[in-house]
Length: 524
Image (cartoon, rainbow, N blue to C red):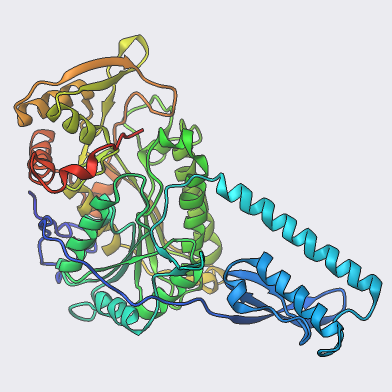
């Protein structure tokens, strides 16, 4: 396995980056943190009709207009939703109107109007709730259900805060403090380990959804915990959590790798992509915008943004307005949003377009992973073909090379300048890089190399490529990354697949305790 460090010929290479990156071991451990509890916040908002300010409050995650003394919102019930709390408000008003306190409804007409508003509000909330039930996103595992059916976040408390601060510690001043989103994912776990080994502070964030078996994510997180990296369990759209992490950790850089992945899965669950890849992206960038100081941001885009382009190899300036999948469309949306946050708020932003990353600890939904599994189980594998039975080709990029590109991007990221800098005519850094291997390989050739390493022949079924968003080929031009980052992918496919197969057989081999975690799992 190659050792990882910031490239020596990087234009802004820092001499203190000396520790090599080594792959994970398989030792597992667990982290227990003290649970947190929701908080009641008092805010104010303007009443433009009456020309005054009235209080507004948040209870149990829901917004409420401030209530007078005779119509109190019960926080315990608010934790279980507006409907119960509103019914409690009505009950209090009814009791007080019978003589126990100031009458809450002095005017019969106003009383009727208020009740109508309450019932309309309940009806709207019920409609929203029913709609949410039909949104079948991968389940998130960042909250615990209590005995009364409500939920509490699994973050917060003094022990949790101490763990975050400890994880964010760097070996010396001048090193980075990086928030890595998607830290329990494939790329995120590798980059987090590399950063920590060279002395940077690292805090991870992951929602541990079940898009693919969660056990693998837990194992990656356990490896990180052994190295002193805490992966916070939470969602990007939890604004309070993000604010707390920034306040506790002193974040200098953000490496945003969290996303709902997969091209074909988007056909079955499009809303999951909007929730994670767009809403989550905006939530994170909003927190970066508000942070003092603002961090530099490096985030994962995708080679899929090149869509149906036929010009190869793909260069960063090629058109990206023809996405072939919903996943690609959300990644293109991220690039447009990133440009906006850079232009308006002066955030330093770097987009990385990954090309088919593979390697140890990889994702079970990827073709190379399922190919290996099926070959070992003596099951057929599906090899897609394009029009006229043309072979599909991919620019397979080994994980170590991608880690090098991510670290070099962080090391050369300039500080954000903020909106004040923009007003002074300054321009914040805005960059886009391809991170690929530059040598596309036909899928059938890829399978042949797997057969060699597994010492087993594949049962090949050639079928037409489904119309779910896949493209016939990818090919990266990495000239810009080479010139500006010192990026030079050096792992050939034969070597890289050898590393992957060795890890796979050790981790999932016959008799392994991890073998059962894949049973019943079928990638889209």
